[in-house]
Image (cartoon, rainbow, N blue to C red; front, side):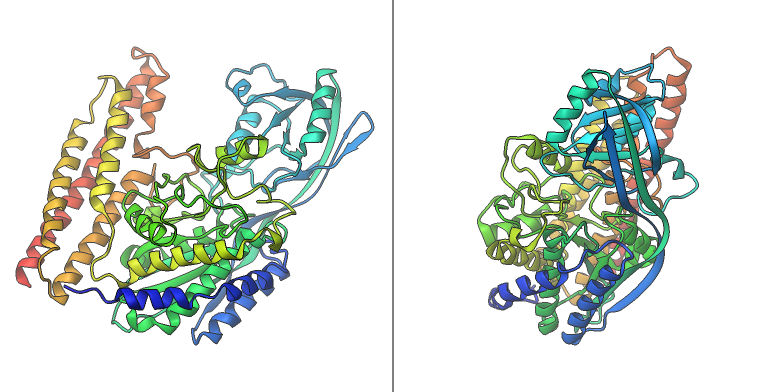
Amino acid sequence: MTTSITSTEKQDMIEELSQDHLIDYTKQIAQYVRLSGSQDEENAFKYIKDLLESYQLSPKLTYDDAFISIPKEASLTVNNEQFECITHSMAASATELTGDMLFISKDDLHHLSDIDGTKVALIEGLATPGIVYQIEKTGFQAAIFINTEYTYEMIVSPVWGTPTPENVEKLPKIPVISVTAPSGEKLKEQAQQGSSCTLSTSVDTGIRKIPTLTVDIQSDQEEDSFILFSGHVDSWHYGAMDNGTANATMLEVARVLAKNKHLLKRNVRLAFWSGHSHGRYAGSALYCDTHWQELYDHCVAHVNIDSVGGNGATVLSQGNCMAETKNIAQKAVYEVTEQDFEGKRYGKAGDQSFWGTGVPSLFMGLSEQPPLDGTAANAHQELFGQSGKSSGFGWWWHTTEDTTDKINPEFLLRDCQVYLLSILELACKDLLPINHIAALEDIKNGLQEWEGKLQGEMTLEELQQRVDSLIQRVESINILKNEPLTEAQLQTFNHLTMKLSRYFVPFNYVADNPFQFDTLFQLPRVPALLDIDALQKVSPQDEAAFFIKTKIRRKINELSFQLNQANQEINRFYETLKKE
């Protein structure tokens, strides 16, 4: 068995990548303030489209309705002193809202009570959906977040993409603003003295047209399968790093792949989204809604890119991946940097809109800042994952300061090389490099964690036995991969790999319905069993415990069915293999 690309061909493609191109693309895109649905954003999309056409490709630019929220203005006055502030996407608008400020910590939200609806919460950190929801639920009429020396643009809704009747009520109903740390210190003093504040906010929220740009780089093979390589174009302010550098990387990878498409065994589809920043991933969610079956049938993997090439971004070991795609990242990162990629489990973020289709994911961000002390670093570590080994994308992320001077050209080229190598691994291997043993081991660990929480009240033994059986069967299949294989047999193996992903990815990453989008942001392994956490909060003798156990039992049945379907898929694989 041979692969379709030699090490020399791969190295030649890496050397074709141009640092000058990357910087030029970034500057061209970052001349625009790319609010979702705006003319400046459309200008950036048309620039990208023109470049893709210059590579002899045929991009498609479409416009569709989406639920978008653009923060406009905010004001804050305390004791006749005005404080500079910003408001946030999906927050409520308000006019001259007045209330006493109460300084609280995030821990306070777990036990606060008797908030009568007239208080305004004053809290340190970034305006994230989970904290905003808790503040609203506790009874505050508004929230003021204290950031660092800069204020950070955020979207405060947990609703993924356009709301449905079932989750529209989860949109925030209170105004939310953010102030700088120096202003925050003054406000804390005023709050201790019992001062009230008056705030106004204007947020333009509603349905508007947003663009989506896709382009296929067609393999010379007669293949329908494709790798989805995606990133958002919309931005906060000029967004040179977030996400201009990512768009530049996509363009440069496209240019090189287009020149070498004869080496591809699978197609590569690039997708440029809008609605990421101002619609909670509205563009990618919309694409999933309108292409669900095609993604299920033909998409091999989703590679996402965000905020690469930043100054000081020396850590490439902590990017997001699934257990089954970690090997791809490890190989690419080590080849370029000699760093050992450890990877972090995804939170529900970063245009990860395709888990319900069973498509494995690789990356979101890639290069991050080393761990640092300070308010900004702590806020970023909390947002990007608490590994303690990195601290996010840089202090300028989501601020007015995300400009081209924050980009390191050598780091941008380095990150581009990692992405190209990762995509070549997926697009050029005879056998798809998705590691289902790692996926099953990750699922097994998740089941063991849930079993520990059950403390003998129920058992997940049936599920664990099915996973153990699947591990043994997949190991046997992997041994067969070492034998000489015909082209027909290769296709049979790859078909099985994709079909197993359709069961394992939702099993490990979808809490509820694969055709909807979960609103959770920190998803545990096997999130369908989240009700086990609810069971721990009630007395075993309580009627509610009986109801929750019933729901868990039904979830176990659902998960068991998925594993049985995966087993049936393996049976069909062997039947097909015998005929070839």
